[in-house]
Amino acid sequence: MRNYTAYAVTRLDGALLHSSICAGLMTTGLTKSPIVHFKVLAGVQPHPVWALDDLAVEIFSYCQAAKQAGVSDTHLQVSVTGSLVSVENFSNIIAGYIEWHIPSSQLRTEAERVLSKMRRNGKTSWPVESLSLPVQSR
Image 1 (cartoon, rainbow, N blue to C red):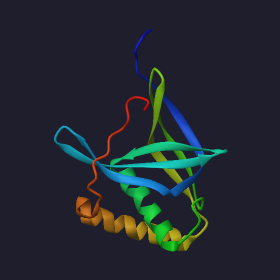
Image 2: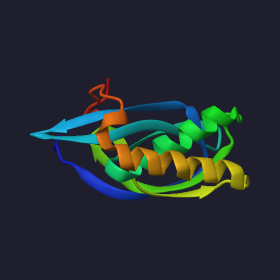
Image 3: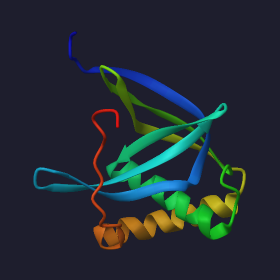
Image 4: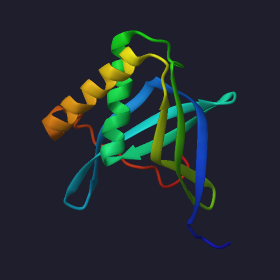
């Protein structure tokens, strides 16, 4: 059986389940990059998604604002475009772009305030837990 890695583009339209977010640092060589893992409910199934670097910070900020506002776990409606990175029997969705469909301008404003603060403070306010992308099924 051949062992190879394949790449494809994927899009999920649904609810970003803000209670599912897990944030930390991914260590690659000497670099420590922000990374988040979260789920998007599209249809009847929640789909696991990963995001890196500035997009990770943006997603984390919106989830923090949603938690602080006490909105339902399905309130953050999104369209996520990403790459489906697969090996023989396992796949990861790596988000490359997210479009927010949030009716509340107050929540959007708060999320942007949290994002601005996170960007100003850099990694000093980012969770330090080490996270790794899974590369095989568990």
